Length: 375
Image (cartoon, rainbow, N blue to C red):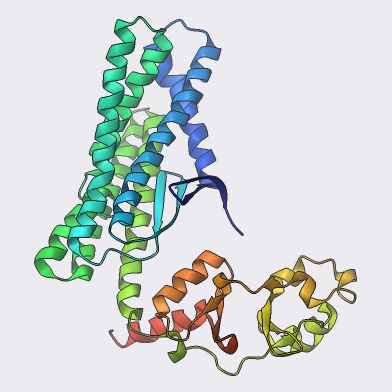
């Protein structure tokens, strides 16, 4: 299930909003309306606080998007395609098709974000002074001042040398450049990132103890997220290093059971799903061409009383580039493609001929074997 909503496309980059974004958008708006703006705009009506808070929260996330776009611009300039940007619980993330190949590229990409935030902070600072001198309404001045302050904090926060923050990536690039060992560099930067995450959570609990519940909740929330992100990022680096150099043809399943496109779902369930206990099957035409993939989830979405009259061709996933992979593709690239298509498996083809099928389970088994062997 796709948990993101496509919002807009900028510079050819699809921008999506993850469902977690709405949670944090509400929390930011509520925090501003109940805490920040009542102090900055004393004695204003409640409707003003909420209106200004919504506008400020929207502009905040716009600046965070600009932060991510700055990373993306540097990546594209260095021949690293960006598949998209997703706004989620703590700002956003740019989805790279491949990781930086040199420490210098990693450094430039990481530094672009904080530099963008500092630049935005300066712009909003100038606007604050301009609005004040031109006697703009106080809510406009206060919002500009807030955006100047928050972008400065975002820039400083991201420079903390703990992975996966931008500062952690800069540190990783430096260690990588000196040691020529990406895994070691990631391990050191990740360890610092975890320590910082635990520090934030510890401070959050102290805030709770002294009655600052809202501030404590935010610190714990941020610390927990950073700790999880640091662990996940390190695991990805280890997995990539372990899987790189292994091609799909080395681990794909070759004796593939296929199903005809005109088969009914009732026959599919009785003769294939129940007997073979696979969760998906490639779908073939009468001429032997691959037409798509039928999954057990697609069958479950059809009412049971319609299985006898519904053909596979009506509910299958039609063939597309997201479902196909070359036998010579790197296994880690295939794993990334599976994560994008949401199916968890790929059809291995060459010249429109089906050679095999590869699943996330196949790749994870390979990784587990390599881990057991110390590789």
